[in-house]
Length: 114
Image 1 (cartoon, helix red, strand yellow):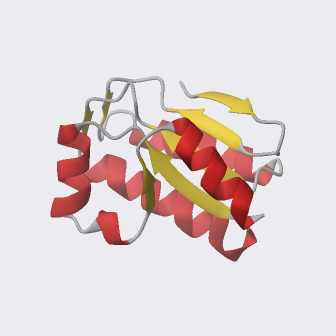
Image 2 (cartoon, rainbow, N blue to C red; image 1 turned 180 degrees about the vertical axis):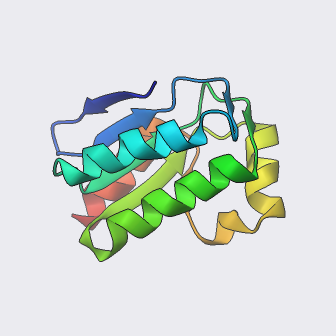
């Protein structure tokens, strides 16, 4: 389901691989990202450029990923379209996650923190 790539700086960029992250597929998304964390990825960027809709289950999965990574690393999100950003704001997740306009900005920010 997910597509991930590793940058030269060791940052893993994850693309959900679905247009809609909902109750139907959010558990699989979370499980796959958690497997990346368990395999040693500690700096993650979730790129939502191709995701046009996210419901509370999708946000819950993302919160579970944040909890899993804990203090061992960093998690950022980028590429939020207007509907996805609206859901983040409604649920006040825009106060919880570091949000960047695109992948390049997120990589720069995480690289500076390292």
